[in-house]
Length: 478
Image (cartoon, rainbow, N blue to C red):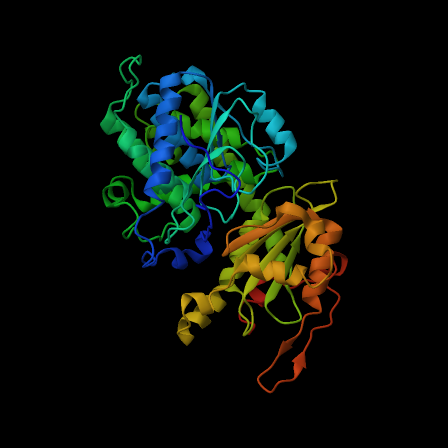
């Protein structure tokens, strides 16, 4: 029997992972207090025991990967490993959380329970305290790297979050699964994929997932696994192109994450995604259609991102936050926030926030994404501030603003300030978001002479849409 975590049992998850916009903070050496990486030996042992028990039981199994490249590649690593260990593909189902939802929502729990799975592995979905993710009859393993101090009841938890530099979920899954290759269940038939081929698959999936979170320029330095042979075999360009294709469908209004999963499932090399006609062996007709859909989705997203890139930023009163407002049914807000975070300059700017009022059309909800401004990272580096004293913590900053209005933090619920310290955001009621922005807008900052400065401008969505300023007109503004 595999041991299960309780709500606050063995606090394995306190994530500081980032998006590619701030990968620098993920590349430092492990903490002097950290003796193991990417998670505790006990947690890795429990997670491996869970997968072995799952394969030996030969019972219906559910995978619940997140929708991005890191989550999908981490999920595919687990999928490939279970099959290589002897679990029949017919016993494995895959569930994708619906648009705008998360695994902790009651409706998602009901949807997952309908699969009738006895084992479930949830990958890269974030963690929080609360009831069991799935019904009482389903044993659940959570593989994650997001910030949380609590976990669902009854889950076996494998978290990378307390072991800096924090691993991506794909790297965590790779470390978990690699030693299990070749470990066959007694009743299993011969593996359809040799161990060396399975190892190659896990390597490029690990590389793709990690690049999806940390960018193609990420330096694969210890303690991260040595991926030099993989990078040489497939090239960073091909891997980067594959990542952008895998990420495309989940960003579109169609939200067809299953297309990305189907494409990953049908390829034998990441180059199959970019050089379709050269795939060896040739792609099946089903896989070919999935891959073509990735290219179509990426083209659509480029058009939509360009359309949404011309809204001018508004600044909080203290100058720490820049807000860009858009309305799109596509998940383009993280892209816009990342783009502006890399180009917008201001002496006090710390965070760029993109708010999308149209993602969940007709639901009176605002989805927003926040990224650390590159100019803030440069200031901290130039001033020689240490990591603890100088780094920007988006989650803490958002909660600080929300705390200024009694009841606002509680009103925004559990989907506020989720994710990572360096890449956070939320899904909140539009009226609550406007309340949060009002606090930011009226916040004050002291200049060097001690006087208070406050910007008083109407930054409502209505007026913002009339501004003709573009990105190019603001990037040099300091």
